[in-house]
Amino acid sequence: MSRCPELLVTRSLLLAILVVAACGGEAPAPTVAPSPAPVAPGPVVIGPDGPSDIPVPAFEVSTDPAVIARGEQVFGAKGCGACHQFGTKLVGPDLLGVAQRRTTMWIARQIHSPEKMTKEDPVARQLFKDIMVQMTNQGVADNELGPLISYLASKNP
Ligand code: HEC
Image 1 (cartoon, rainbow, N blue to C red):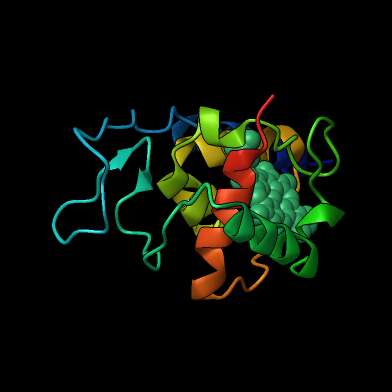
Image 2: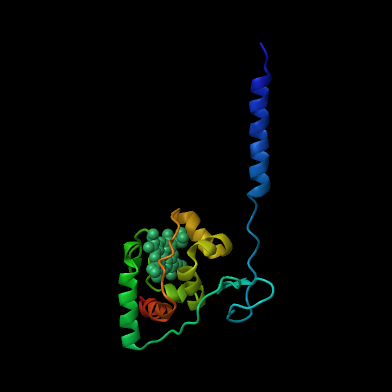
């Protein structure tokens, strides 16, 4: 009787543990952006606005009630409400006061490129790790982004 298969199993297990140990290290510490970081060429900066290499269309945040009402329509039409509410957690995080804990640029990147954010942004990655659901790209049009974020920014405790 040979003990080789058993040995092999033990060895591959050890190897697997080693690989996990080697690859499961801490994520690189985020660099803090000195100022609001628009998408800029050059080295990638990951700050409060999210990774600088994730492009976002230009958008404007407004407190105009008409713009906010338009944003509420977009929120409904794009199916955000299937996963998000204000004041309770559904599938995704509770969005009440989200513009107080994130910058509007970060929110824009999360809406526009949620998968990239999970890969590149430490805050989004942590949310994904906690919830274990990937936010989907809901295809928000460029001209809908400003109203949508204006609506989110109007929902504060
Ligand atoms: C399939 C469910 C789902 C849909 C649809 C969805 N989201 Fe999300 N959202 C999530 C999850 C889950 C997260 C946490 C990040 C992750 O796990 O990908 C998240 C994160 C967020 C965040 C960051 C929250 C925080 O606390 O920082 C914002 C803002 C957001 N979503 C806005 C939206 C908007 C606006 C829409 C509609 C265009 C939308 N989401 C559609 C599931 C969803």
